[in-house]
Structure formats: structure tokens, C-alpha cells
Length: 560
Image (cartoon, rainbow, N blue to C red; front, side, top):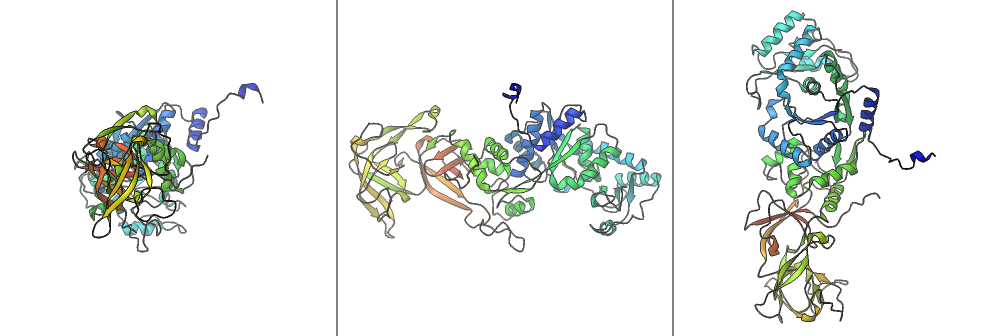
């Protein structure tokens, strides 16, 4: 091997980047790379859309090109301004910067209409009076060719007249459609004279009542790409069979340097709900409290739960880009947020199921302050001082009257360390009428303060705590998958197989006083309990609400 190659960097490129490189090298693409993310504003974006956003934006960045956010708003029956605004927010949050490159398909309705006129004049489109059922019947099947519509041979003049009258509102909804004239015997059903315009009297969120005919997606989408000079139209695999129609539209409409469609595999996440129909029903039935309920995987829900753009980018990098559909375990997404937050956020003390610990020999009414590092793995986050007194809250699980073997926390006669505090020894306890422990009585050894250099003896257990006199009340929400992972997402009848334990609300929790003024979406690691985020919808000053983002333990093991 020659020495010239020794220091060359080996760069791994996905198949889309390889295609773009080939197009640039061959001169097939002789302009700036322009990509786009083209959502339909008929719902909230979910984790699968994040892959498309990051892929398209990343390609534009890599090739010093441009990235468009374009709304494919050609179906007013399901579209809302609410969805437009939510999508814009999600795309920006995930990192897709579109700046002044925000577009709407509806801005091009006039040009689409002119394209349809062009096709009619070329003898490539005709007005058809068949009913929807008749059109389906004439289309044929996967094994049988279709047959021509009896209206297929209308003259250019008649088609122009009828199409203009369709636009002018002279016919009832559904009475006529405009169809492309391609090939009713094609092996690809999408090419069997597809409908490209239909009559529909609907108020559009952007154009109002200006139009009563609307283009079909397969006709509109390639025109939108061509008008915006998109070089590479990146879409998911289900559009692979539509590519011949995509190419037919841009070629017959005579666009110069038409876009190139490239398909990649969708990302399927195990045991999650992404279907808009199902999420809408969950919202309407009050099972979740909106499209941003933290149990969902809409981008808004992930943001509210506490996921970060960086964690989602890492997740997409681990998933990669391929031509083969596959499923990804949700545990991988959880691994990514742990990796992102573990060095970023403070590690604080919070008690989710409290019992009181009373240090009987601690000076009454005295409060001292102990120095606590904000993150033992990241010294740059500094430290804070926490109040410590003779009355604390500890986790109920950290005390047992009759412990099992290898239980190293508190039980009668045992000694443990209070994290960043002292050694305490359990002397007694108190129960209520149901036998539930309410208070634990301990003594402390003043010589054993953390950081004092005490070496007289060792203890095996360390537990966390919150000072009872200064503790801040909080509500904590713990989440499981909204569907039953053991039984799968759907029942035999197609309904959702819901997990009744998907949400647990803990009302009587206590957090350390440093969290008193925690802002919405602030993130923390609760020592020994997981990563948590201040809820952006329900948390208010004086009424803190925390969502658990993820527990501390992971079942996912990344490949090294």
C-alpha cells in the first residue's frame, strides 16, 4: 500500500449519500442540493417523522445545500392550523432549521391547475364521469389488467371545457374527476389512469373557499418538489411503487432538471402507537390528556416527557439509514436519553414514597448545611448546600422490620450512611393501625460526617434523604408503555391492547429545596429513582409536577 493512503480518513456513507455523490460526479445533478420535509398537517408528528426531518436536514447540511419545510396541504377535510403550528414547533425543536424556507402546497394550486391544463392539451388527461365504485371496478386487480373508461377518448376541447366547469363549481362533489391518461394495462396499478383532481367543496385553512377542486397527493407532490427545485425527494419505502407516477408527472409537465425520488425504510418502534386514528381516539376518549401525553411517542409528547433533541439524534444515528424495514426496541431510545443526560443534569434528592426518619440525639431545632456535588461524574456542574436536621424523609423501601438476606439498608439495629451526611443506626420504629411504618427512630454518630475523613468503621448501605423541615411537596408521574408489551399493541378485533398501569401518579412526594423554583422542562436525575422532567403543562409554582423520563437501569446493550 502506498504511503499516500495511510492518513486518509475512512468515511462511511449511507446509500442515499452514495447516490447523491454519483449524481454530482456524473453531472446528473448540477446545482445545489435541496431537500425537504413535506408533512401533511393532519396530526402531530411522531418519532418516525423525526428520522425524516433529521435525514433531510442532515443531507442539506452535509452538501452545503438548502432545506425546505413544506406542508402538503391538499386535503382540507383533515387539516388544521393547530397541526401546522405544532409541526413547525416540532421541526425547529428537533433541529431542522428552515428559516425563511417555509412553503405550502396550497401556494402552488394555480400552478398545479395550469399543469393539469397542459396535460389535457397534450392528450394526457381527461375528465371521467365514472363513480368511485366504477373506477375501482375498471381498475382491475394485481393479476388482471384494467379496462379503459368510456370517457377516456373525450376530445381535448371537451375536457378543457369540463375541467374549467369543475373549477367553477358547476358539478356536485364526486360527480367528475380528472384522470391522467397513462396505461390501464400497466403492471403497476398506480399507473392505471390515476385520479389527479377531484371536486370537493371544503374550506381550506390557507386558501379559504377559493377552490372547489383539489389535486390528489400523487399529482401535487412531484409538482411541489419541481417548483421548489428539490434535487432529491427522499421518502419512505411505501412510495417506491409510486415513483413511476412521480417521474411521469414531472416529465409530462415538462419541468427542467426534475427531482429524483429515493426511498428509504421507515423506522418501526416496538410496542408504541403512531397511528393518528388511534391517537385521536385515545385523546377523544380521555385515556390520554392530549397529543402531547408523555405516554405517546409524538415529538410533542417526547419533549414534554423530557427527551432532548440530542437524544433523538443519537437514536437515529444508531438506527441508521437502510432500504430494509426493521423494528427497533424502545429500550434503545431510553438508552439514548440516559446517555445524553447523565453528565448534563444535576443529581438531586427526592423521596417518592416517604416515611419520616427522626434522629433522636440530633440537637433539637438545629439545621446545618451539607455540601453536595451536583453531579459526581461532572465536576463542572459544581455543588450546592442542602439543609440537614434531626427530621428527614427517606424512601419507604429503605427500611424493613424483618429484612431478607443481603438487605443493607435500614432495619432495627443496623447502621447506614445518609448520603453526604452521617452514619445513623436504627433504634426503633412506629407503625399505624394497619401495621404500616410511619416513623423510624435513629441515632447518629457526629464523627462520621461525609468528608470528615472518618475511618473508624464501614457500613454497607447508603440511602438518600430530604430534610423534612425544608422539603418541597411535589407530584410525581411514573410511566409504563401505554400498550401491554406482553400481549402486543392490538387485540384480535383491531382495538388497542391498553396497559392499565401505564400511568402511576404519586401525590405525596418530597423534593429537596433546590427544586422549589424548578422551571418547566427542567431535567434532573433523582438519585436512585431515574431521570425526571418538570411537566410543561401541569406544573405551576407551588404545585410542582415531575414526569419520569426513564429509569436508571437499561435493558439495552449497545454494540461496541
